[in-house]
Image (cartoon, rainbow, N blue to C red; front, side, top):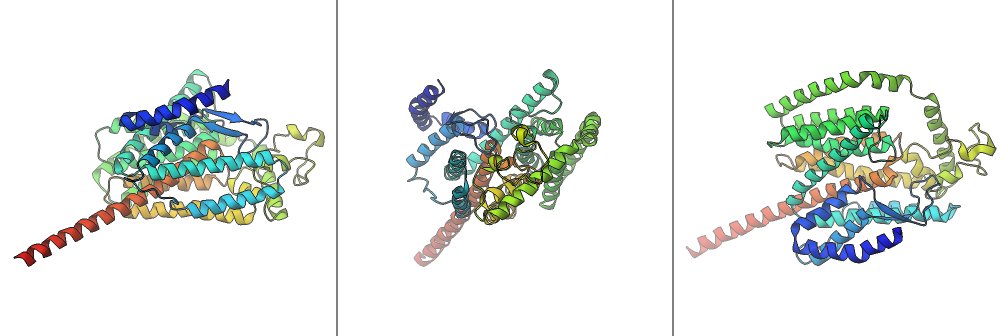
Length: 455
């Protein structure tokens, strides 16, 4: 049945979505919204699925987000004369390098299916990145994006409130598989919303304060220790950069209001937060260390790594990377410690080699540096808030990724590639506006010279 539904959507839904989008801009905007929203609420069909295995990818999955992306791709191809296509957007070379060395690691894989699951995922992620970069060609789309981000935060927040107050869950996870996944996802979007509140002039302040509050409630309700700390770090960084870019009464008033709201939220949740820190499992911390040691062993043992998406297999017998872990060999499959290393950086090193980790770090910090340059380039521009919010959110997520492997999970992988594409789009639009102004200036000077010569 799932195959029938998928191919029916592919054969009929995609062409219809494309045709309707050509004729109606509202339909087009809905499709674009689905590209963003379905990174939150995953709806997909998994072909050759291995859900029982631990890894970053568990099948050849195709989701509604991919089908929406394909519709937008068709629109890009239709309009390529009006909007020239950039075959290799900024950062493509680094991503290709990361992809190439990840693929080379497969030579050491014991489960090729698992490796090619991740290869398929990485191909999809670049396609998603490429489509967004080539689709957004004016600032009107940026006006839509903040609305879409707000809807995503509201959806997560309402799901969290339902889980907390109706279902009675203590650590909520929203529509995600785990609370840590939700926290890292919401941090980026809530950071952008905060930057929007501080750096924009609008009349819907109460609405956006509610959106930011829902994002904050989602993070607090997860009781993720690292998430709470790095979210606060992101907030402080955004406020500092916003003040540095220009201080005014609105920013001061909103900051004071947020402080009051924050104090109220802390007072209400302080008992649960303290309990979470005081009663945190020592075994969890010990397991992180044990898995980190195992990952280091893997990276040191194989120059090309132990194989893409094969960590969950090689951490268990008959492989010996777990020799420092005291466990019962007969029940190794049930040992919760033998899962996957809790840091994306060591995970990349273990599966694909130290050199691939270096490339990965170069790639993510390349986009990070472009974004900080965008903060300067967009000074006195109303869209500067995107760069400021991304700076806070990405910094927090990069730091938290030293403790979590979430950045390679589908939800966050899509979001990270969306943020990377947004960074390159802002860079592209700035260059385009600069060329346009230069061209207008030259035309104006030419007209003046021509007029003077005629006189």
